[in-house]
Image 1 (cartoon, rainbow, N blue to C red):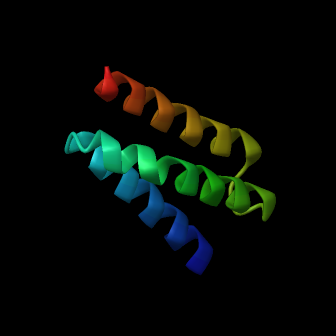
Image 2 (cartoon, rainbow, N blue to C red):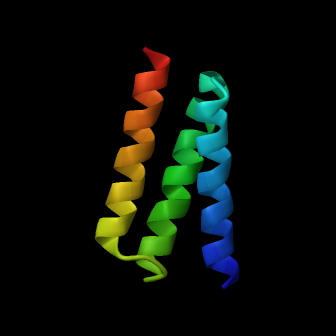
Image 3 (cartoon, helix red, strand yellow):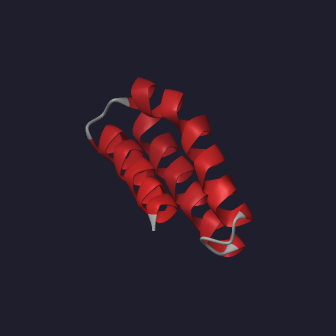
Length: 67
């Protein structure tokens, strides 16, 4: 439960930064969030495909805002 909460908080933080237009903050948090997603997938908290989906959507959203 604690790990899932940590994952959700991390995702919420980076999504909020992207939506607020703080692309520099979001880019700084990107690798940390990706690492967190990978750890959760390795521990089987989330499925591997879900991890890939989260990472893909975040990267796509960030690239769209950055351009």
